[in-house]
Length: 148
Image 1 (cartoon, rainbow, N blue to C red):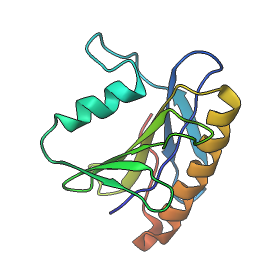
Image 2 (cartoon, helix red, strand yellow):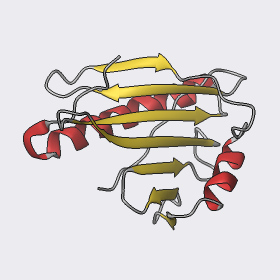
Image 3 (cartoon, one colour):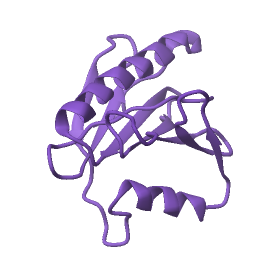
């Protein structure tokens, strides 16, 4: 399953947020992501460099807009990197397709954006909507939010 992209941030600092897309209600929840560990990349460029060293990650560049997309070989994870010149650059969105014990699927989205807050908020809203559209196209619409 292929994913597209999404993001969010704070004005002059790097911010990371997690989102979950709900199933039937279409609600979106937002919560601060867990604190980064000391070994976690501190920049969008660092995330890209780290992914390039991981086995099982495939890279592509979209046309004509030039987003760099990193996808896990089993399609359970995708990272979407904004191209230079994009209004929210530099930023990356990670989407994880997860499964609960009862079999329900959900999308967990984390965003890492080094741009201005307004640009990151705009992009986050756009791709939150893309997640909703993707959920609506799934069989049985069984993408649910993670248990909080």
